[in-house]
Amino acid sequence: MIANAFIGLGAWAWIILGVVLIGVELLAPGSFFLWLGLAAIVTGMLDALLGLSWQAAALLFALLAVGAVILGRYATRSKTQPDTAATALNQRGQSLIGRVFTLETPIKDGEGRIRVDDSSWRVIGADRFAGAKVRVVRVEGSTLVVDDP
Image (cartoon, rainbow, N blue to C red; front, side, top):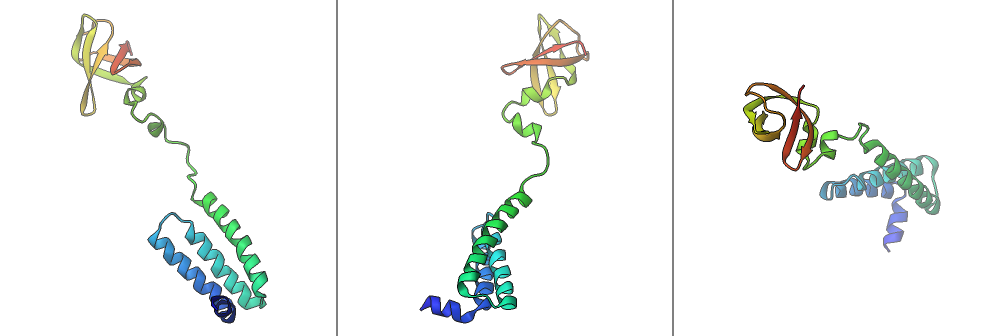
């Protein structure tokens, strides 16, 4: 019964199906149903122009759906290089290597502190006075190892 109604609507059935699938995309975002909906709408338009049989229209929809999903995934994929900050997630100290900072407190007996944005970091290195410039050379746990810039 539903199949007869679908076949009876002809090209309009595909267009209605496409609009419904795009509507489903609004309820379940993920840009999957969007591409299926567009494939169904294109199938409906081609069916209206060419007068396809229901079998040919179903095959055309299947091909267009696969193509649209692949093309959609390619189009929505990020074209930028991976974010280096994201790869150092939970390893903030690693992003500080090579940067130069000013000592907040002097390095005495091998220990001192630097200010990085809104946080203070423990540093180890050769003794230096407060205000001296130091370069971060490596990270040991939550301590930065510094040297001359």
